[in-house]
Amino acid sequence: MSADSKFMNPGEVPVIPGTEGWERMYPYYYRFSMDKEREDYENSMLWYYDGLHYPEPMYPFDLIWDEAWYLGLSQYNTRIFMVPPAFGVDHRITNGYIYISPVPVTDPKQVEERLQHFLQRAGYYYENWEDLYGRWKSKMETLIKEIDNIEFKDLPDMEDISIVHEGVGRSSGYELVKKYDHLIDRALLVWQYHFEFLNLGYAAFVTFADFCRKAFPGIDDGTITRMVAGIDVILFQPDMQLRKLAKSAITLEVTDFFKDESTPAEIITALGENEAGKKWLEQYEQAQKPWFYMSSGTGWYHDHYCWLDRPEIPFMAIKSYIKKAQKGESLERPTQKLVEERDRIVAEYGSLLRTQEDKDAYNELLAISQKVFPFVEEHTFYVEHWSHSLFYGKMRELSAIFVNHGMIKDIEDIWYLNRFEIGQALYDLVCAWGTGVKACGPSYWPQEIEWRKGVIEKFREYTPPPALGMPPEVVTEPFTITLWGITTDRLSDWLDAGSVKAEDMSKLQGHPGSPGIVEGIARVVRSPADLGLLQEGEILVAPTTSPSWAPIFVKVKAVVTDVGGIMSHAAIVCREYGLPAVVGSGYATAAIKTGQRIKVDGHTGKVEILQD
Image (cartoon, rainbow, N blue to C red; front, side, top):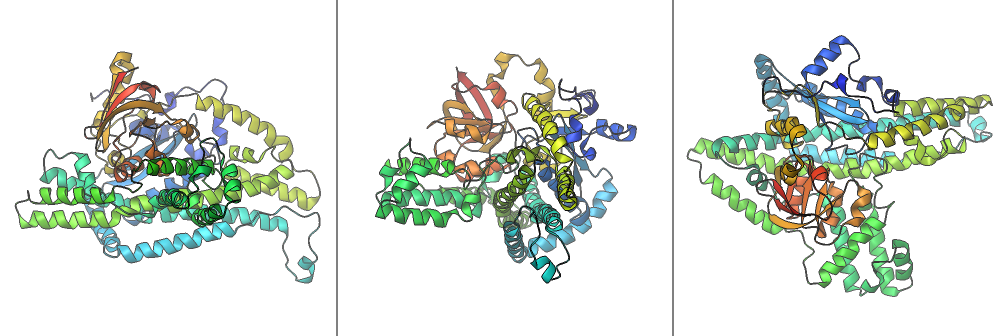
């Protein structure tokens, strides 16, 4: 990149006509350019659009998860584990989309000072990983149970006489406010735990990968990632349950009930009238808790309903697995093949090392990476899927109370308020209840929500710039590269994008997410709602994918994403399922149209449009 190459400054992003005043939907600290000092800082940094987590505009309430990791990741880097070259990740929002900027440690002396603390603190976790991780699972399961036990009840016209007889001394209104505050606190605590191990998991792999690149010049990232493949984590359990249910349907000879045109309700009703079907339904019921708390998307949005709320998703997968098994195809993940290939690659590269010192370092770094790597995926089920699904269910309980009191018109309207505004609206409601007057909210929120709905729709039609501000001369921050796929070359591609001709968009370069070369018909999927359109043998092209999409991988030949690096969830899941993938291609969903024939090379990261 040339010295004067830069993206537009954050303050130069034009406001979308009709959305003026959108900033009031979000906390003030998310705004760009609040004052001159802050503006100078922002213009000097690179801000990239976090499409990895947020492929859609942010509803005011859903921003809670971004707030949670804004603090969670940053504090572990900056204040707890003292990661030597990196402080936290700064966050902003513009036109409804999240932009983030890693904050580097620029003073070499400070890097050295932080290194000593990091080795001591991170070393303790690496040495005691199994024990600490066991405690983590216990903490998370306890916290999830707490969330599940929170119950929102509407306010009574008159308190029960027990309030008097038992000297309770507090009202249902107070309890309602307290429960909301408690639910928000539990949700934020989930994300405190989220990053207890995650940064260390990535750090271990990044350190191992850096050793390999220096020890084996020319080694590609795809080969390095295969050295930690063949993992067995609970994140794959939901999909494994669906495969077991498909096998059981064949064993019990009830597959005739699983017709393509039949809805889940129709299938369940029919099975319930059949003795073998009743046995299958028992297994289906047993599989649901907790495995059907799997979100249909990334889990970052309220409308990424879990399988319990959208049974058509697991039933679609079960039908596909039944057909696959009836054709004689295996329903097992190719784990053994991945393990054999992993061990072969590890041995081959290990034999190239000449000194015992290098061999010891190689074996030690590899062992740590393989030990900690499962957490990189496993935490996702506990946090983004299980806890988020329960949390959103509880918020809908509260929203129903708002509807009953005229604060909002529909249960789904609550997402247009941010978490602070909901607290204010709730206090408005209980004070009016306690006083015996009409609350202010019914005359304020319905019209405000209607305006916000229009704003969100305009945001949805907008394509956010991939980056803002000043790109660094060279991208070196390891998490930025491995998780988001932001590299020096990728930034150059974005800077040059405006001058690229349409005919030159026929070839895309991304990261080799998972090995394999295939050709097939593309299917562009922009949200979980479009997954039902996927046809057998197509190539999935999406802004990003979620681990929860694994059941539909049985249908597709390969996966291509706009965003993500070699350690993104899309890349990891595809490797574990033996599915070719190219991640971080930048413009795949813009350049490729459904129905086009494309070629995907998961070894080199190349995607080519062959014909319309």
